[in-house]
Length: 122
Image (cartoon, rainbow, N blue to C red):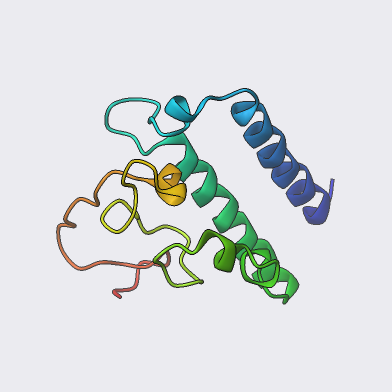
């Protein structure tokens, strides 16, 4: 198996797993986390698919589906279009909001300087 086949298989499993998790899920469960300290299922799925979109499109040298497909505009989240991880609970998530499904737990204060994925300070 070469690298392309490995990545195709891995990202295919993400899609299969997301569909399996969401099949038949009700709104209450979608808004709940797997446990009391976890982000809601909806936010976890959004984050997982946003990160995949970001990474695959960066490697392919194409615009992300999130923006090119109009999803950023349609979701109208109070986030930068490039955002893939920021919790949105402080700006959305009131009962009845269509974006409320993306509620997440508040971010904990970091100890020390914030670092990007490569260990460099932001």
